[in-house]
Length: 543
Image 1 (cartoon, one colour):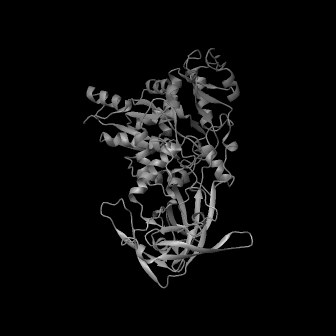
Image 2 (image 1 turned 90 degrees about the vertical axis):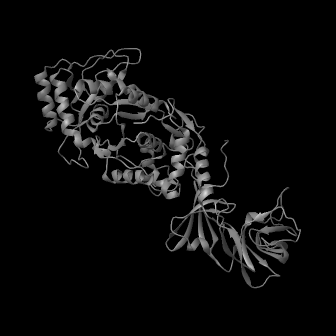
Image 3 (image 1 turned 135 degrees about the horizontal axis):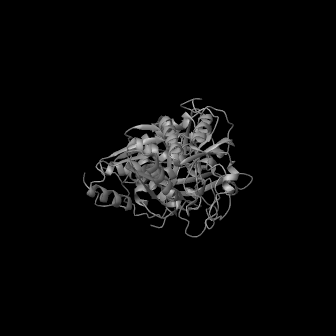
């Protein structure tokens, strides 16, 4: 197998093992727990595990850590599969921890027989209190020295449902004085009377993640168990399980920094709370950082993969600006999304000296290798955005104002000749004249204007609900504050505007750049055109 020349630290390790012949086929796995939907933070682990296997022509399994049945659902399993397929990754095999429950139990029996595990009657709080601190050793359980025969009988009773939840646990017998707290006789099995989404009520004891995970990696043939940095202190336990259960295949755990993004909820527990309390419409709400939410919002899969590739693989945790993620989304859409026009806060303009109607040309996308044009209908009455007309314009305001001129994108220069207001002084109608000699594409008038605005024909347009989003979380500079204290109550703003018919005729789910507005996804809801914001036009990220 060829080595990867442009390597990160994980690939440096793999390259060395390939060169030494320790590994012949790179085999990784992506190991989510099916207790919720995947979010943006999981995308990095997805790209690293699947991407590393792809680079070396190896294999990557999809592995579901379903050792906690009280929180896991088949719904989450199917959602995770759909997210991975959306990103374009292909797994080699699908496995579940529950596939290996019989083997995991068998190896626990082996540990008991080898004097390396014991049944403990202490409560979870008592175990925690006796574990010690970073500077003080823990205290041994009074049940640590039970005989092998007694432990086997008690563990069998645990399996047969004779004890209540929390009444007994099986602990590995390692070292209560270890400087690594994870090695101080950790719990490896607990009693849990809960129906499992795959095995039903076959089991009432379930293995702990730290015990089951290395065994499952081994039995899948995984060579490199790539996981986030919080598992670094668990690696000695991972290796202890591998060595002491006697499994034949010995995978290697390597940790990398997890993905943290400003203004973004990176907690399945809290995302679930947002869904359950109605703060969002569901896991797929476009404001949610879940992969299904990002997909529903219109984030291109390739843009997300480009982002993960660019941030790379690091050994130290850090926080990435959300603007950096938006930059990759914007960059991709700028190259691929067609251009269109829609008006959020419409104000009607009557062009008094124009009659009839005509089609003018505009670019489909100026960044295409082969430029394309399309027709836009122009008429006597049009809509512009209220922000593009001002009775008291500030300095350097280059849009429409009384007696002022502005160019209509792809059409003509117009001159404001008057306006009408309601009893509150709000502009309700603008009057203008057009300059026939200023038609875009054939303008030889010599007339120069500094401003160009978007518009839609009032005669040929469709009502559109335009949804604009802000972050679910306020600015990240809130040290120590809980997510609930940082929630943005104004994360969704809805406008009732108008769009050109081109958007109404487009395919469901297609993405567009709304000129001077942002990138939006088109869909239809209750028979009405909806334009849902993907990302704004403004790039705040400092490259």
